[in-house]
Length: 471
Image 1 (tube, rainbow, N blue to C red):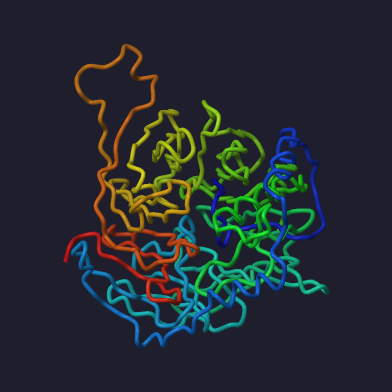
Image 2: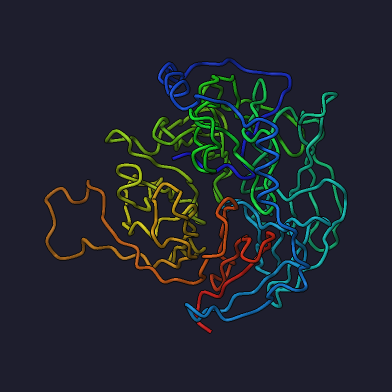
């Protein structure tokens, strides 16, 4: 299963490199996979243009789209938050909410929007050209935003980062011409972190498909275009095989000092700071999940590098990792093996204990989420082409975790074993009209009463919210 990229896609851009590079492992096996999968490369321009035309219906006026309704299949209230087509909520692990629970941010064509969570009323925070949300500070009413810069060839060459005051919209530049891509801000607002790559590999070449997250264009050995999911795996396997030198680096918000945390020719991605520990970073070895040891943590000084999940069988996969809000646990999608048995796994960073929550095939989700108090989980479902091959998986799910080993009788070494659990599901939104080439990227509001997600339920992408409690 290839991890979903979204806004986190490549993360690194051309720039002056720094640090010593080391191979973490031999990549010859990926070259063999590349030869097997790629019988091809990207679609021809003509085929891609044809595919684009077939998937780009004219988009309706947003005023004609449903605004507020009770989901007939579940009894839960759903609100369309955004007022412009092609509006997107933040990536699932990028904080979208102010610490006081009053505001949420999202991206829209006209600029960055903020939403009054008491009334679900959106308003324009800034129309400054090119800025897009990075994440909201965990402690301050400040949105960190990024703007991509381009080189003479018109390709991305770096980023500019700014802090935008949520209350006033005032923009304060933090850094310009960053060599690399910033993806996260730490818990005490002192450091930014991201990745740098020696050269760019374009994951999604060719035209993008309207109403989706883009387009993974590739053809199979028979010369026919592959499905979105299959093309994505081909492109990601090929990117992994490139062995491009990369760095994870931090940038001091006050001084601008740049420090290399770790360097490798593995594909480094999805860099996330802990929400509570300003010097703990989680990141992944990116690529098709059955080919990589994905989930890692490291300190900002480069010490304490740990592989969080070690594979125990061939074709076992783990990924789409994220922190619990107290910073004590890492949660991730686990499959033993891929596409057959499904778990939401947790790893305690303090005592190293593990809990694995089982779920049915149809309940597997592209992304999972947790409430700030840690009592509820959620998932955004998936379609029949994805790794679970779900027969009826297109739902927004609420999950109530249930530990199933508290029966009074345990193995003598139970304390040293993985604790089993199960997720008890409730369906919130029927996503049957949603095209999962746009991934919903759901997030709980700070009070745990709503789930925010992006979807193309009615054609164009919009930001929606569903009430956790029934209407």
